[in-house]
Image 1: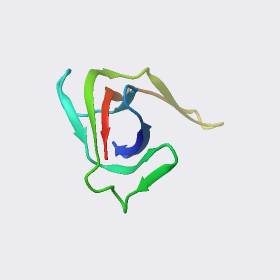
Image 2 (image 1 turned 45 degrees about the vertical axis):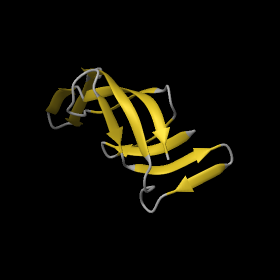
Image 3 (image 1 turned 135 degrees about the horizontal axis):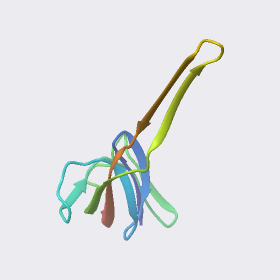
Length: 103
C-alpha cells in the first residue's frame, strides 16, 4: 500500500517502512506524528484520489532525526560591473520513518 502525502509545500509518495527527509516539523525525536493531508491512496491496481484530500486517510510516521542539509552556495555576479556576492544556505529537515498507511 502506498500514499501520496503533502507536507512542507511538497508532495511525496510514501509506503510503510520508508525513510524520507521532509521540511522541518517542530516535534521531538522519537515522537509519533500523523500526516492527514493524504492526496491519494493506492494498493495494487486500485487507487483512491481525494478532492483534494482522501477523507479518513492518515499516514503515521515516527521522527528519527532533526538536522540540516549540506551547504549550498548562492553566487551572484554582473559582468564588467565589479558586482559579486556570495552567500551560503543550509536548509533544516526532519527525517521520518513511515510506520503505517491507513485508508
